[in-house]
Image (cartoon, rainbow, N blue to C red):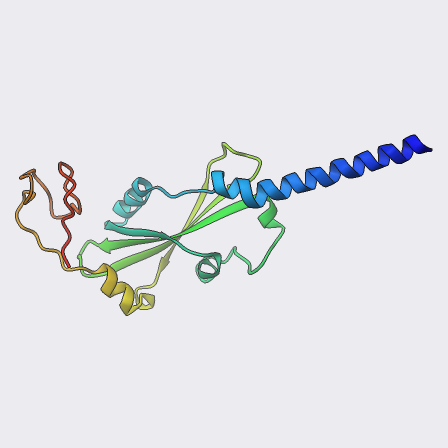
Length: 173
């Protein structure tokens, strides 16, 4: 009888330790080390497809992303146990250089599949929803000196934001 109780106790201890390990890895270790990231090169490539130039990328909270992605639910769901998501706001300057293009990006990674490909969803923010503060912050007046960098005289184009040769920031407020 004592052996059966001991085996039952050991199984409970094992299940408890497994649950603690799962919760620690899901909510602490995995988000710290494996949370999906959106790299600037990927953002620039996406914006070039949309005839825009890159201005900024920021992370957004789940509550902000709720308005732009129908697959998200408020609070905790069973889906959250097997997926980890990151949300970003991608801001680009339209080809006419007078309007902003704002995209919300959701990157989903499945837990337990560390080498699986990230799933990406994009949602464009309507131009009527772009606030005056955002427009003022990101629509800066550009001043072009010439087709050469004023610091090192390297060749530049009007789409360059930073001189590739010396790193001079070419936007002016």
